[in-house]
Image (cartoon, rainbow, N blue to C red; front, side, top):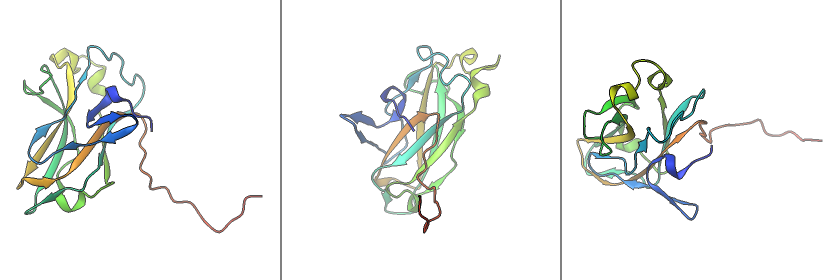
Length: 162
């Protein structure tokens, strides 16, 4: 998986080191992608937003996080946001360091007459909705990618390569 600082929705890359966005209450991603500048993003390829928890989330109660990918006509994502993908609700107990999950971006939204651009939605970003919170700690990164790296591949052991 190759990441690009211009396609990072949450967090930042500095000198090769990733820093996650702190999310304790409902918030928008730290960055947005301007779709008027990034034309043909992922043309002919599936696109995903991969989320990775950096610092484990904690809460005094049973808080939940619902990440949603939205597009909007405003870079603040506040003007008539259109949801184009969601992961569903994730319990705080699941949001441990290293936990990853993916939201697929629907390619049909980027290439038909009912596209995001025809709806006047220029900016793409993430919205983190915290319920029964707040969270007391937790960071997350979110990257638009073409490949999913899950690190959960297991191969047979006990054989020799000659």
